[in-house]
Image 1 (tube, rainbow, N blue to C red):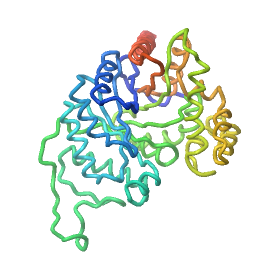
Image 2: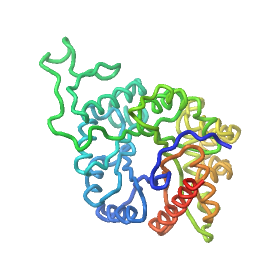
Image 3: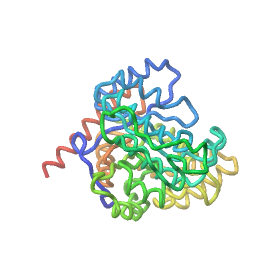
Image 4: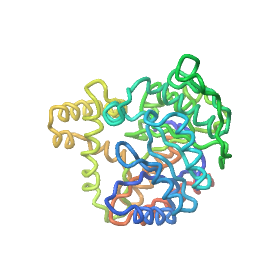
Length: 368
């Protein structure tokens, strides 16, 4: 049984979020579907970026088409925009959304940062910490002065023209602070996220093994966490399909290629966070096999080597009773926002059914 990591109340103890899926449809149609999902009970939508369209412009469009939905970036990297610009962006998106924005940040990886943006991938944890501190200063309308290991504002004498002076944001933001979620995978990064971020977004989250994988890092970070921040939001989940008629084997098999990519192909041997996460979660032998197949070019065999038990624990697929058990497992592991990917022809109905299950569990928890 996993130890509870934390809790933050949402509707009835857990909120629902999803990443905006890639779609060839016109964005007006995508936004209309997001509005439908909002009415179905979705609480948060995150817009990915990577090396696709920028996320911020889509956030603004979604803000105009929704009413209560929290809208965020999922994620923007901390390198390609200055730390101050991230703060301006957070304040601006919060303005156009009427106080419904959250800033999801992460370090991405060298392939994107150096290969697409042409920026050295250096000191990722320090860069993220600098950016979070600067963003908060900008949104709070502080006179911006920051001397960190990767960010210096204003530039000190001897750098630039020497004409820079401390400034503060001209506008008055809607809120004095905007939630910041950090996509941190392991070790010191997770520890820092637990210390300074409003939310933490892991991947490959097996709730039954969460304490084994991340418990020590989270505990160390929380021990230094300011009470002013409130409890840490834990954001995790997987694919979801609810119903007696769901083809469980087919849905989980469709998730194999993605799992194999992360566990086997994201990095070299000995330098793959996702492989290490799965290994710590109790699937070390499978993780080695998947990586061996993948790095040797046998992607189909890598996918076939992903254990069914791992897929079943990562995702929420099956009859309502099974989904209830999986929601309860994520909740028991401290997940406060369930990040889901609806599978099937009717994602709106899937969110409606999941919302019913989550709220039912929340009500029962309050009664006991």
